Image (cartoon, rainbow, N blue to C red):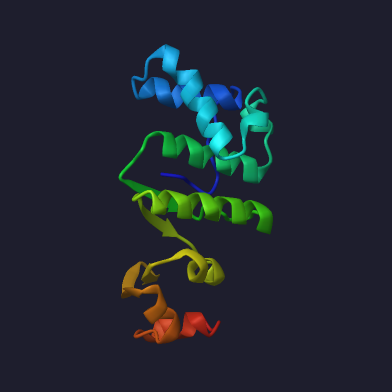
Length: 158
């Protein structure tokens, strides 16, 4: 699970990564190479020795997502992962999410960003006041929502 505000350890970026690998019982000899490979894959290698808490908001969120991906989950839950991020950081995270999905990972993501949902969603579960009001493919939802709440949301009236 990745939350809108990441919780990072008071350690370097690399140490945040190796901590997760240690929890997964990865041998000490394999931890640093695996962490470095993941950082390189997501263009974060230049931050390896930087204190994680000194990263920008987008970098912190990227690190949080990389740590979650290290666990190789079958399902990844994302709660507003790009909230309050600039367009560049949002784009980077969206590419990471799409790449994970292409690698056969199921992604369940909460977002209030209509354009983001249009860009990356395959299916929509529309929730209004804690109740599911519609479940459909993204294309069906955006072309012709079945629920009144869905219609209002797309029209910007909700």
